[in-house]
Image (cartoon, rainbow, N blue to C red):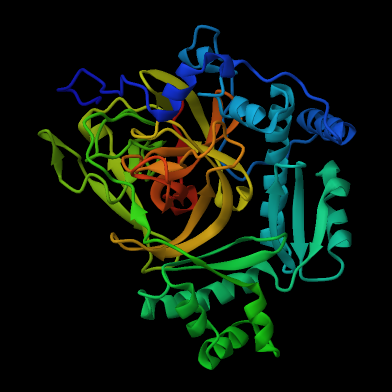
Length: 476
Protein backbone atom coordinates (compact mmCIF):
# COMPACT_ATOMS: atom_id res chain seq x y z
CA UNK A 1 0.00 0.00 0.00
CA UNK A 2 1.33 3.40 -0.93
CA UNK A 3 0.20 5.37 2.14
CA UNK A 4 2.94 7.49 3.68
CA UNK A 5 2.91 5.45 6.88
CA UNK A 6 3.27 2.15 5.06
CA UNK A 7 6.31 1.24 2.99
CA UNK A 8 5.48 -2.29 1.89
CA UNK A 9 3.26 -3.21 -1.02
CA UNK A 10 1.50 -6.46 -0.19
CA UNK A 11 1.34 -8.94 -3.04
CA UNK A 12 0.51 -12.61 -3.39
CA UNK A 13 3.79 -14.44 -3.24
CA UNK A 14 2.34 -17.90 -3.85
CA UNK A 15 0.98 -18.97 -7.21
CA UNK A 16 -2.72 -19.54 -7.77
CA UNK A 17 -4.46 -22.51 -9.37
CA UNK A 18 -3.75 -21.55 -12.99
CA UNK A 19 -0.14 -20.46 -12.52
CA UNK A 20 0.54 -23.63 -10.54
CA UNK A 21 -0.82 -25.80 -13.34
CA UNK A 22 1.51 -24.13 -15.82
CA UNK A 23 4.52 -24.49 -13.55
CA UNK A 24 3.80 -28.20 -13.23
CA UNK A 25 3.58 -28.55 -17.02
CA UNK A 26 6.45 -26.44 -18.37
CA UNK A 27 6.31 -28.09 -21.78
CA UNK A 28 2.94 -26.39 -22.30
CA UNK A 29 4.53 -22.95 -21.99
CA UNK A 30 6.14 -23.03 -25.41
CA UNK A 31 4.62 -20.56 -27.84
CA UNK A 32 2.42 -22.44 -30.30
CA UNK A 33 3.93 -22.85 -33.77
CA UNK A 34 2.14 -21.65 -36.89
CA UNK A 35 -0.50 -24.03 -38.20
CA UNK A 36 -2.01 -24.29 -41.63
CA UNK A 37 -5.70 -23.56 -41.37
CA UNK A 38 -8.51 -24.57 -43.65
CA UNK A 39 -9.07 -20.92 -44.51
CA UNK A 40 -5.50 -19.72 -44.34
CA UNK A 41 -5.87 -17.38 -47.31
CA UNK A 42 -8.75 -15.58 -45.65
CA UNK A 43 -6.76 -15.04 -42.47
CA UNK A 44 -3.80 -13.74 -44.46
CA UNK A 45 -6.19 -11.34 -46.17
CA UNK A 46 -7.47 -10.11 -42.81
CA UNK A 47 -3.93 -9.68 -41.54
CA UNK A 48 -3.06 -7.66 -44.63
CA UNK A 49 -6.05 -5.46 -43.89
CA UNK A 50 -4.78 -4.93 -40.36
CA UNK A 51 -1.41 -3.81 -41.67
CA UNK A 52 -3.11 -1.46 -44.11
CA UNK A 53 -5.30 -0.04 -41.36
CA UNK A 54 -2.26 0.51 -39.18
CA UNK A 55 -0.63 2.71 -41.79
CA UNK A 56 -3.55 4.25 -43.66
CA UNK A 57 -6.53 4.30 -41.33
CA UNK A 58 -6.50 6.46 -38.23
CA UNK A 59 -10.03 7.10 -36.97
CA UNK A 60 -10.37 9.34 -33.95
CA UNK A 61 -10.69 6.96 -31.00
CA UNK A 62 -13.82 7.16 -28.89
CA UNK A 63 -11.74 6.57 -25.80
CA UNK A 64 -8.76 8.48 -24.42
CA UNK A 65 -5.49 7.14 -25.78
CA UNK A 66 -1.87 7.96 -25.09
CA UNK A 67 1.33 7.18 -26.94
CA UNK A 68 2.41 3.57 -26.47
CA UNK A 69 6.08 4.39 -26.49
CA UNK A 70 8.55 1.53 -26.29
CA UNK A 71 8.72 -0.94 -23.44
CA UNK A 72 12.38 -1.61 -22.56
CA UNK A 73 13.55 -5.20 -22.71
CA UNK A 74 14.28 -5.22 -18.98
CA UNK A 75 10.73 -4.16 -18.08
CA UNK A 76 9.16 -6.73 -15.69
CA UNK A 77 6.29 -7.29 -18.11
CA UNK A 78 8.54 -8.47 -20.92
CA UNK A 79 9.57 -11.64 -19.09
CA UNK A 80 5.96 -12.78 -19.54
CA UNK A 81 5.51 -11.90 -23.21
CA UNK A 82 4.64 -15.01 -25.19
CA UNK A 83 3.86 -17.03 -22.07
CA UNK A 84 0.22 -18.22 -22.13
CA UNK A 85 0.12 -18.30 -18.33
CA UNK A 86 0.48 -14.52 -18.30
CA UNK A 87 0.12 -13.02 -21.78
CA UNK A 88 -3.50 -12.92 -23.02
CA UNK A 89 -2.41 -12.92 -26.67
CA UNK A 90 -0.31 -16.05 -26.09
CA UNK A 91 -3.17 -17.76 -24.23
CA UNK A 92 -5.47 -16.99 -27.17
CA UNK A 93 -2.92 -18.34 -29.66
CA UNK A 94 -2.39 -21.53 -27.69
CA UNK A 95 -6.08 -22.14 -27.12
CA UNK A 96 -7.04 -21.69 -30.77
CA UNK A 97 -3.95 -23.42 -32.15
CA UNK A 98 -2.72 -20.45 -34.17
CA UNK A 99 0.55 -18.55 -34.24
CA UNK A 100 1.22 -15.63 -31.90
CA UNK A 101 1.46 -13.34 -34.93
CA UNK A 102 -1.97 -14.33 -36.16
CA UNK A 103 -3.44 -13.95 -32.67
CA UNK A 104 -2.04 -10.42 -32.50
CA UNK A 105 -3.45 -9.65 -35.94
CA UNK A 106 -6.89 -10.74 -34.74
CA UNK A 107 -6.58 -8.52 -31.67
CA UNK A 108 -5.65 -5.61 -33.94
CA UNK A 109 -8.59 -6.29 -36.22
CA UNK A 110 -10.96 -6.42 -33.24
CA UNK A 111 -10.07 -2.79 -32.58
CA UNK A 112 -11.56 -1.89 -35.93
CA UNK A 113 -14.56 -4.16 -35.33
CA UNK A 114 -15.18 -2.21 -32.13
CA UNK A 115 -15.04 1.14 -33.89
CA UNK A 116 -17.52 -0.03 -36.52
CA UNK A 117 -19.94 -1.55 -33.98
CA UNK A 118 -19.82 1.65 -31.95
CA UNK A 119 -20.67 3.72 -34.99
CA UNK A 120 -23.54 1.47 -36.03
CA UNK A 121 -25.09 1.47 -32.58
CA UNK A 122 -24.96 5.27 -32.48
CA UNK A 123 -26.02 6.01 -36.07
CA UNK A 124 -28.08 3.19 -37.59
CA UNK A 125 -31.59 2.68 -36.26
CA UNK A 126 -31.83 -0.74 -37.95
CA UNK A 127 -28.65 -2.11 -36.35
CA UNK A 128 -29.69 -5.33 -34.62
CA UNK A 129 -26.60 -6.37 -32.70
CA UNK A 130 -23.21 -7.97 -33.32
CA UNK A 131 -20.92 -10.74 -32.22
CA UNK A 132 -17.43 -11.99 -32.99
CA UNK A 133 -16.77 -15.67 -33.52
CA UNK A 134 -13.31 -16.90 -32.58
CA UNK A 135 -13.72 -20.55 -33.55
CA UNK A 136 -13.93 -22.55 -35.72
CA UNK A 137 -13.43 -19.44 -37.90
CA UNK A 138 -12.70 -15.88 -36.91
CA UNK A 139 -15.12 -13.24 -38.10
CA UNK A 140 -17.53 -10.40 -37.36
CA UNK A 141 -21.31 -10.91 -37.59
CA UNK A 142 -23.74 -7.99 -37.83
CA UNK A 143 -27.52 -8.06 -37.74
CA UNK A 144 -29.94 -5.53 -39.24
CA UNK A 145 -33.70 -5.35 -38.89
CA UNK A 146 -33.92 -3.93 -42.42
CA UNK A 147 -33.40 -5.96 -45.59
CA UNK A 148 -30.67 -3.63 -46.88
CA UNK A 149 -28.09 -4.20 -44.15
CA UNK A 150 -25.37 -5.03 -46.63
CA UNK A 151 -26.01 -1.83 -48.55
CA UNK A 152 -25.98 0.18 -45.34
CA UNK A 153 -22.55 -1.19 -44.49
CA UNK A 154 -21.09 0.06 -47.77
CA UNK A 155 -21.30 3.60 -46.39
CA UNK A 156 -18.51 2.63 -43.97
CA UNK A 157 -16.25 0.92 -46.52
CA UNK A 158 -13.93 3.90 -46.91
CA UNK A 159 -12.96 3.69 -43.22
CA UNK A 160 -13.27 -0.08 -42.76
CA UNK A 161 -11.84 -1.99 -45.76
CA UNK A 162 -12.87 -5.32 -44.22
CA UNK A 163 -16.58 -4.60 -44.79
CA UNK A 164 -16.88 -7.18 -47.56
CA UNK A 165 -15.67 -9.85 -45.10
CA UNK A 166 -18.42 -9.10 -42.53
CA UNK A 167 -21.26 -11.60 -42.20
CA UNK A 168 -24.57 -9.74 -42.50
CA UNK A 169 -27.57 -11.42 -40.88
CA UNK A 170 -31.28 -10.55 -40.68
CA UNK A 171 -32.73 -9.49 -37.33
CA UNK A 172 -36.29 -9.65 -36.04
CA UNK A 173 -35.80 -6.40 -34.15
CA UNK A 174 -33.28 -3.57 -33.97
CA UNK A 175 -30.94 -3.39 -30.99
CA UNK A 176 -32.85 -0.36 -29.70
CA UNK A 177 -36.05 -2.42 -29.78
CA UNK A 178 -34.32 -5.23 -27.90
CA UNK A 179 -33.23 -2.72 -25.26
CA UNK A 180 -36.83 -1.51 -24.97
CA UNK A 181 -38.12 -5.05 -24.53
CA UNK A 182 -35.39 -5.82 -22.02
CA UNK A 183 -36.66 -2.81 -20.06
CA UNK A 184 -40.12 -4.38 -19.94
CA UNK A 185 -38.68 -7.60 -18.50
CA UNK A 186 -36.71 -5.55 -15.95
CA UNK A 187 -39.88 -3.84 -14.80
CA UNK A 188 -41.49 -7.21 -14.13
CA UNK A 189 -38.25 -8.52 -12.62
CA UNK A 190 -38.28 -5.82 -9.96
CA UNK A 191 -41.80 -6.83 -8.97
CA UNK A 192 -40.94 -10.54 -9.14
CA UNK A 193 -37.32 -10.70 -7.96
CA UNK A 194 -37.84 -14.24 -6.68
CA UNK A 195 -38.71 -15.40 -10.23
CA UNK A 196 -36.20 -13.43 -12.35
CA UNK A 197 -32.63 -12.66 -11.31
CA UNK A 198 -31.24 -10.89 -14.36
CA UNK A 199 -31.58 -9.97 -18.02
CA UNK A 200 -29.03 -9.49 -20.77
CA UNK A 201 -28.83 -9.21 -24.55
CA UNK A 202 -26.53 -11.55 -26.41
CA UNK A 203 -26.17 -14.04 -29.23
CA UNK A 204 -27.67 -17.53 -29.25
CA UNK A 205 -27.49 -19.76 -32.32
CA UNK A 206 -26.52 -16.82 -34.53
CA UNK A 207 -29.35 -14.57 -33.43
CA UNK A 208 -29.55 -11.81 -30.85
CA UNK A 209 -31.71 -12.81 -27.90
CA UNK A 210 -32.93 -11.39 -24.61
CA UNK A 211 -31.59 -13.75 -21.96
CA UNK A 212 -33.57 -14.11 -18.76
CA UNK A 213 -31.84 -15.69 -15.78
CA UNK A 214 -34.23 -17.42 -13.39
CA UNK A 215 -34.02 -19.94 -10.54
CA UNK A 216 -37.04 -21.76 -11.97
CA UNK A 217 -37.21 -21.12 -15.73
CA UNK A 218 -40.66 -22.68 -16.13
CA UNK A 219 -42.22 -20.24 -13.65
CA UNK A 220 -40.43 -17.29 -15.25
CA UNK A 221 -41.68 -18.34 -18.66
CA UNK A 222 -45.21 -18.60 -17.32
CA UNK A 223 -44.95 -14.99 -16.17
CA UNK A 224 -43.44 -13.70 -19.43
CA UNK A 225 -46.04 -15.31 -21.67
CA UNK A 226 -48.93 -13.82 -19.72
CA UNK A 227 -51.16 -11.45 -21.65
CA UNK A 228 -50.17 -8.41 -19.61
CA UNK A 229 -46.43 -8.89 -20.21
CA UNK A 230 -46.80 -9.65 -23.92
CA UNK A 231 -49.00 -6.56 -24.28
CA UNK A 232 -46.31 -4.48 -22.56
CA UNK A 233 -43.71 -5.82 -25.01
CA UNK A 234 -45.90 -4.89 -27.96
CA UNK A 235 -46.54 -1.40 -26.60
CA UNK A 236 -42.84 -0.77 -26.01
CA UNK A 237 -41.91 -1.34 -29.65
CA UNK A 238 -45.20 -0.88 -31.49
CA UNK A 239 -45.39 -4.57 -32.39
CA UNK A 240 -48.68 -5.54 -34.01
CA UNK A 241 -48.05 -9.27 -33.59
CA UNK A 242 -47.07 -9.58 -29.91
CA UNK A 243 -46.52 -13.33 -30.11
CA UNK A 244 -43.41 -12.65 -32.23
CA UNK A 245 -41.74 -11.10 -29.20
CA UNK A 246 -41.45 -14.44 -27.44
CA UNK A 247 -39.23 -15.74 -30.23
CA UNK A 248 -36.36 -13.55 -29.07
CA UNK A 249 -36.61 -14.60 -25.41
CA UNK A 250 -34.32 -17.25 -23.94
CA UNK A 251 -35.05 -18.20 -20.35
CA UNK A 252 -32.22 -20.02 -18.61
CA UNK A 253 -31.49 -21.37 -15.16
CA UNK A 254 -29.52 -18.93 -13.04
CA UNK A 255 -28.07 -18.95 -9.56
CA UNK A 256 -28.17 -15.82 -7.40
CA UNK A 257 -25.58 -13.30 -8.62
CA UNK A 258 -22.69 -12.81 -6.21
CA UNK A 259 -20.57 -9.80 -5.29
CA UNK A 260 -16.92 -10.71 -5.52
CA UNK A 261 -15.69 -9.34 -2.21
CA UNK A 262 -13.90 -11.85 0.04
CA UNK A 263 -11.60 -11.48 3.09
CA UNK A 264 -7.99 -12.05 2.10
CA UNK A 265 -4.77 -10.71 3.62
CA UNK A 266 -2.97 -9.67 0.43
CA UNK A 267 -3.97 -6.98 -2.05
CA UNK A 268 -2.60 -5.89 -5.39
CA UNK A 269 -3.82 -5.00 -8.83
CA UNK A 270 -4.27 -2.08 -11.20
CA UNK A 271 -3.19 0.67 -8.85
CA UNK A 272 -1.39 -1.07 -6.04
CA UNK A 273 -3.15 1.01 -3.39
CA UNK A 274 -3.70 -2.03 -1.23
CA UNK A 275 -7.05 -0.83 0.12
CA UNK A 276 -10.14 -2.93 0.37
CA UNK A 277 -11.63 -5.51 2.64
CA UNK A 278 -10.76 -8.49 0.52
CA UNK A 279 -11.06 -6.75 -2.82
CA UNK A 280 -8.67 -5.62 -5.54
CA UNK A 281 -7.71 -2.03 -6.44
CA UNK A 282 -8.89 -1.05 -9.88
CA UNK A 283 -7.97 1.57 -12.45
CA UNK A 284 -5.91 4.61 -11.55
CA UNK A 285 -7.55 7.86 -12.62
CA UNK A 286 -6.48 11.45 -12.99
CA UNK A 287 -8.64 14.53 -13.58
CA UNK A 288 -11.63 12.46 -12.52
CA UNK A 289 -13.28 15.62 -11.26
CA UNK A 290 -10.80 18.42 -12.17
CA UNK A 291 -7.62 19.94 -10.90
CA UNK A 292 -5.32 17.13 -12.01
CA UNK A 293 -5.85 15.16 -8.81
CA UNK A 294 -5.31 11.43 -8.70
CA UNK A 295 -7.96 8.88 -7.74
CA UNK A 296 -8.21 5.11 -7.38
CA UNK A 297 -11.23 3.04 -8.31
CA UNK A 298 -12.62 -0.09 -6.74
CA UNK A 299 -16.00 -1.77 -6.34
CA UNK A 300 -18.46 0.14 -4.18
CA UNK A 301 -19.20 -2.94 -2.09
CA UNK A 302 -15.51 -2.92 -1.13
CA UNK A 303 -13.90 -0.70 1.50
CA UNK A 304 -17.10 0.07 3.34
CA UNK A 305 -15.23 1.36 6.38
CA UNK A 306 -13.89 4.87 6.54
CA UNK A 307 -10.49 3.61 7.65
CA UNK A 308 -8.43 0.48 7.12
CA UNK A 309 -5.54 -0.21 9.43
CA UNK A 310 -5.81 3.34 10.72
CA UNK A 311 -5.38 4.81 7.23
CA UNK A 312 -8.20 7.07 6.09
CA UNK A 313 -9.77 6.29 2.74
CA UNK A 314 -10.44 9.97 2.20
CA UNK A 315 -13.51 11.32 0.38
CA UNK A 316 -15.41 8.50 -1.32
CA UNK A 317 -17.91 9.02 -4.11
CA UNK A 318 -20.71 6.64 -4.98
CA UNK A 319 -21.74 6.91 -8.60
CA UNK A 320 -24.99 5.87 -10.17
CA UNK A 321 -25.49 4.50 -13.64
CA UNK A 322 -27.42 6.31 -16.32
CA UNK A 323 -30.63 4.57 -15.26
CA UNK A 324 -31.21 5.45 -11.61
CA UNK A 325 -31.96 3.87 -9.20
CA UNK A 326 -29.65 1.19 -10.59
CA UNK A 327 -26.38 1.28 -8.72
CA UNK A 328 -23.12 1.28 -10.62
CA UNK A 329 -21.15 -0.61 -7.91
CA UNK A 330 -18.25 1.78 -8.39
CA UNK A 331 -16.22 3.62 -5.77
CA UNK A 332 -13.79 6.43 -6.51
CA UNK A 333 -11.28 7.20 -3.77
CA UNK A 334 -9.09 10.25 -3.34
CA UNK A 335 -5.54 8.96 -3.72
CA UNK A 336 -3.69 12.18 -3.03
CA UNK A 337 -5.46 12.69 0.28
CA UNK A 338 -3.92 9.41 1.41
CA UNK A 339 -0.49 9.73 -0.16
CA UNK A 340 -1.04 6.69 -2.32
CA UNK A 341 1.51 6.17 -5.08
CA UNK A 342 -0.95 4.80 -7.62
CA UNK A 343 -0.06 3.61 -11.09
CA UNK A 344 -1.88 2.00 -13.96
CA UNK A 345 0.54 -0.87 -14.16
CA UNK A 346 -1.27 -4.14 -13.53
CA UNK A 347 0.23 -6.33 -10.84
CA UNK A 348 0.64 -10.05 -11.57
CA UNK A 349 1.93 -12.07 -8.67
CA UNK A 350 4.99 -10.31 -7.32
CA UNK A 351 5.75 -8.79 -10.73
CA UNK A 352 4.16 -6.29 -13.10
CA UNK A 353 2.39 -6.99 -16.37
CA UNK A 354 0.11 -4.75 -18.45
CA UNK A 355 0.28 -1.00 -18.95
CA UNK A 356 -3.15 0.62 -19.02
CA UNK A 357 -2.74 3.46 -21.49
CA UNK A 358 -6.27 4.10 -22.69
CA UNK A 359 -9.93 3.43 -22.04
CA UNK A 360 -12.56 1.70 -24.13
CA UNK A 361 -16.33 2.09 -23.86
CA UNK A 362 -18.69 -0.86 -23.71
CA UNK A 363 -20.23 -0.27 -27.17
CA UNK A 364 -16.83 -1.30 -28.57
CA UNK A 365 -16.51 -4.51 -26.56
CA UNK A 366 -18.98 -6.88 -28.21
CA UNK A 367 -17.29 -10.27 -28.62
CA UNK A 368 -13.94 -8.97 -27.41
CA UNK A 369 -11.46 -10.90 -25.28
CA UNK A 370 -11.02 -9.16 -21.91
CA UNK A 371 -8.95 -10.06 -18.85
CA UNK A 372 -8.48 -9.26 -15.17
CA UNK A 373 -5.84 -9.96 -12.53
CA UNK A 374 -7.72 -10.00 -9.26
CA UNK A 375 -6.08 -10.78 -5.95
CA UNK A 376 -7.66 -14.24 -5.80
CA UNK A 377 -7.69 -15.61 -9.35
CA UNK A 378 -4.50 -13.81 -10.46
CA UNK A 379 -5.47 -14.23 -14.12
CA UNK A 380 -8.96 -14.36 -15.59
CA UNK A 381 -9.95 -14.31 -19.27
CA UNK A 382 -13.45 -13.83 -20.68
CA UNK A 383 -15.22 -13.29 -23.98
CA UNK A 384 -17.79 -10.49 -23.86
CA UNK A 385 -21.22 -12.03 -24.43
CA UNK A 386 -23.36 -9.00 -23.52
CA UNK A 387 -22.88 -5.28 -23.05
CA UNK A 388 -26.27 -4.76 -21.41
CA UNK A 389 -26.59 -6.96 -18.33
CA UNK A 390 -29.18 -5.93 -15.74
CA UNK A 391 -30.05 -7.57 -12.45
CA UNK A 392 -29.71 -7.54 -8.70
CA UNK A 393 -27.29 -8.88 -6.10
CA UNK A 394 -27.42 -8.88 -2.32
CA UNK A 395 -25.65 -5.52 -2.55
CA UNK A 396 -28.13 -3.84 -4.87
CA UNK A 397 -29.47 -3.50 -8.39
CA UNK A 398 -27.20 -3.07 -11.38
CA UNK A 399 -27.80 -1.88 -14.92
CA UNK A 400 -25.78 -1.82 -18.11
CA UNK A 401 -22.93 -4.05 -16.95
CA UNK A 402 -20.66 -5.90 -19.38
CA UNK A 403 -20.95 -9.68 -19.10
CA UNK A 404 -18.07 -11.97 -20.01
CA UNK A 405 -17.80 -15.76 -20.11
CA UNK A 406 -14.66 -17.83 -19.55
CA UNK A 407 -13.87 -19.13 -23.07
CA UNK A 408 -13.83 -22.82 -23.94
CA UNK A 409 -10.49 -22.42 -25.73
CA UNK A 410 -8.61 -21.27 -22.60
CA UNK A 411 -6.14 -24.04 -21.70
CA UNK A 412 -6.27 -26.24 -19.66
CA UNK A 413 -10.07 -25.89 -19.55
CA UNK A 414 -12.69 -25.27 -16.88
CA UNK A 415 -11.06 -21.99 -15.87
CA UNK A 416 -13.17 -19.39 -14.02
CA UNK A 417 -13.58 -15.82 -15.22
CA UNK A 418 -13.62 -14.29 -11.71
CA UNK A 419 -13.34 -15.28 -8.04
CA UNK A 420 -14.28 -13.84 -4.67
CA UNK A 421 -11.62 -11.27 -3.83
CA UNK A 422 -11.32 -10.00 -7.42
CA UNK A 423 -13.93 -7.26 -6.89
CA UNK A 424 -12.79 -3.81 -7.87
CA UNK A 425 -9.83 -5.04 -9.90
CA UNK A 426 -9.03 -3.54 -13.28
CA UNK A 427 -10.61 -5.29 -16.27
CA UNK A 428 -8.81 -4.59 -19.51
CA UNK A 429 -8.47 -5.53 -23.16
CA UNK A 430 -4.93 -6.15 -24.35
CA UNK A 431 -4.16 -4.34 -27.58
CA UNK A 432 -0.58 -5.54 -27.92
CA UNK A 433 0.99 -7.05 -24.84
CA UNK A 434 1.92 -5.42 -22.50
CA UNK A 435 -0.29 -2.49 -23.58
CA UNK A 436 -4.00 -2.59 -22.78
CA UNK A 437 -7.13 -0.45 -22.61
CA UNK A 438 -9.05 -0.29 -19.36
CA UNK A 439 -12.68 -1.33 -19.86
CA UNK A 440 -13.94 -1.26 -16.27
CA UNK A 441 -13.69 -3.04 -12.94
CA UNK A 442 -14.67 -6.53 -11.76
CA UNK A 443 -17.85 -6.52 -9.69
CA UNK A 444 -19.98 -9.67 -9.80
CA UNK A 445 -19.95 -13.34 -10.81
CA UNK A 446 -22.51 -15.84 -12.02
CA UNK A 447 -22.60 -19.64 -12.48
CA UNK A 448 -20.35 -21.34 -9.95
CA UNK A 449 -17.24 -22.98 -11.38
CA UNK A 450 -17.41 -26.71 -10.57
CA UNK A 451 -13.67 -27.08 -10.08
CA UNK A 452 -12.63 -23.92 -8.23
CA UNK A 453 -14.55 -23.03 -5.08
CA UNK A 454 -15.61 -19.41 -4.76
CA UNK A 455 -15.11 -18.80 -8.48
CA UNK A 456 -17.53 -18.21 -11.35
CA UNK A 457 -17.70 -18.81 -15.08
CA UNK A 458 -19.25 -15.40 -15.82
CA UNK A 459 -17.87 -12.02 -14.79
CA UNK A 460 -19.89 -8.81 -14.48
CA UNK A 461 -17.92 -5.66 -15.23
CA UNK A 462 -18.73 -2.06 -14.29
CA UNK A 463 -17.90 -0.40 -17.64
CA UNK A 464 -15.97 2.86 -17.84
CA UNK A 465 -19.21 4.36 -19.19
CA UNK A 466 -20.25 4.51 -15.50
CA UNK A 467 -17.11 6.39 -14.52
CA UNK A 468 -17.05 10.18 -14.10
CA UNK A 469 -16.58 12.32 -17.18
CA UNK A 470 -13.16 13.80 -17.81
CA UNK A 471 -11.15 10.68 -17.01
CA UNK A 472 -7.58 10.71 -18.25
CA UNK A 473 -5.57 7.49 -18.10
CA UNK A 474 -2.78 7.63 -15.56
CA UNK A 475 0.26 6.09 -17.19
CA UNK A 476 3.67 5.25 -15.83
